Length: 339
Image (tube, rainbow, N blue to C red; front, side, top):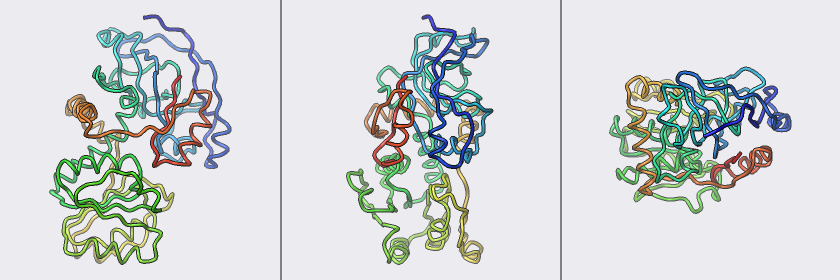
């Protein structure tokens, strides 16, 4: 296959904590596309999503900072059109890409990427699912492995209308694990899949804490998967029974965790820990298990066991419109950019 020496890409000129200003600064430009060497590939991007981490990246508030001007976008799916000698067998094949450890980003027509950051895609896998394979499914699976290792029989999910909680619910359904969902508003709970033993709570209700404590009563060893942080983390932690663990994987509140009962942590053997997708992926690469885990996820998607919802498809030039659509209804599914 042939490829150009230039490519169209979305460019972020500077980080800005004001999201509106960050969005308005985005431009679509034509930039140089170097030839691949060694373990590098040229991938024609076919689909690339917007994730909460991408939005935080635009604001400079994510843990990944890239040299400016930068191309945003942490994951994509595409076809390999050229490769260095190490990865020539992937030419003409579809791959899923995860790009947090490289200077380049995925919101581009073509990208030069390390072959180590590409996962071969099974022919049966839908392109949109391939584009969203790395961040949410790997996060859900990595945390679900923590649940299974601890032999927890109950999981608490906040921001429960999001994609990661939806994937965790699907995994819990296969293992008959109880789910306690926490939504901000009742509309977020509509049309979501459920598990056999599921409780839905709403953080905006006056008796939320009372209902949460009641839902946790009589249980031990609960695992919380916390995407919010802030004061809600303290409320969740304090309601937990003994031997429970709270896994923080997001900070949607943009606030520090507060209100934690220190004595309960000490005397009830409760703890708070973090989950970092980059660390999880690095460990999988180091152990040689990344492809096995990725294939497992692909098989689950193909079998219909898990699925990422898609809310809209936009051209690269519509990046601002696409992100605004996503922000207005994150529980509605991912927004995809198709170069």
